[in-house]
Length: 132
Image (cartoon, rainbow, N blue to C red):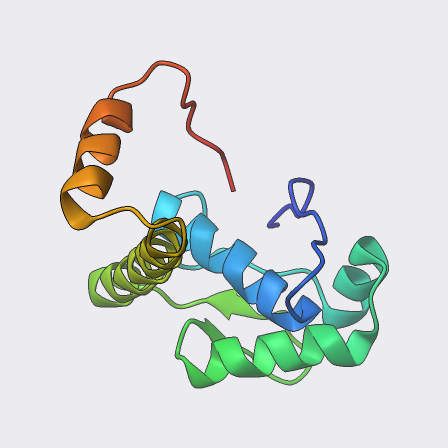
């Protein structure tokens, strides 16, 4: 069963979006695989300390995106093929890159300055990979 031990609530975005992002990061990282099961909505809402309707909304959106399937009386499970994983990974990368570009522009960096910064930091040992 999928663990939410690394999930941390943040300010600034709706909780259901944070749940979706956490799961998408797991999909992109390969820690969530096809057939992995989700805890029941009640169990998950209790684990996270959030309203069950919030978890329900996140699951409904994941179902609409084709990332999980749910059957009455059964737990939800991930339905992931290579195309779905690639789409999630691309969506996450574009979202993160767009946020970075917005921040760099707001700080007044030019494109060459931003590229130089990224080149300098790319292989920096101080930047450890975060696990979802």
